[in-house]
Length: 189
Image (cartoon, rainbow, N blue to C red; front, side, top):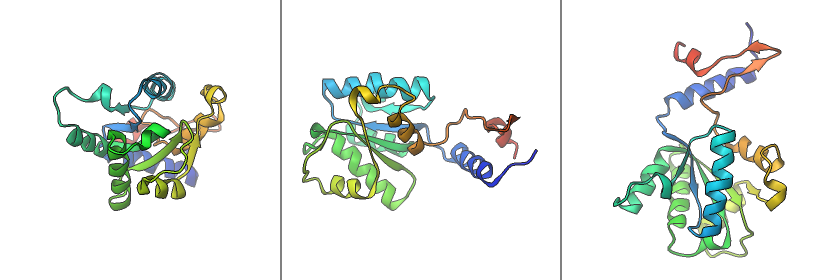
């Protein structure tokens, strides 16, 4: 069986994911209001977990009652491969937990490089005074949610989002009908 350079890189990248010690594929940061919670819990979680097989960390769902919010937030971000930021006018309000998540993710990405930040524009954000968000929007790709046009998992929004996501642990690769490598076969390498 012969593999090209692309397959080799995918396998090496997947092996890295096996050994990175991360518990979650994606930590989702969003403004805590009914509309955005519905978008995150039903739409994003529904497709990313149920259709694409990613393991999401959603603070309000995965945190234990009685914990210190700041400590738990930082811990969850450390345990995640990606930080998915759902941008909206409510997201940029000063003093929100969402801004703590954004700042922690950007700092982690800049200093240690062990998390990537993904920006999803749920609703347009006009000018913002949050300097971290201004900088992030200039250097990171912003994937735009376009309402009904973006709902179908085979659509452009989801394809763009998948490109930014980590390689999934359950993936198996094939080329011209050949059976590719799997995580279980990589364990023996």
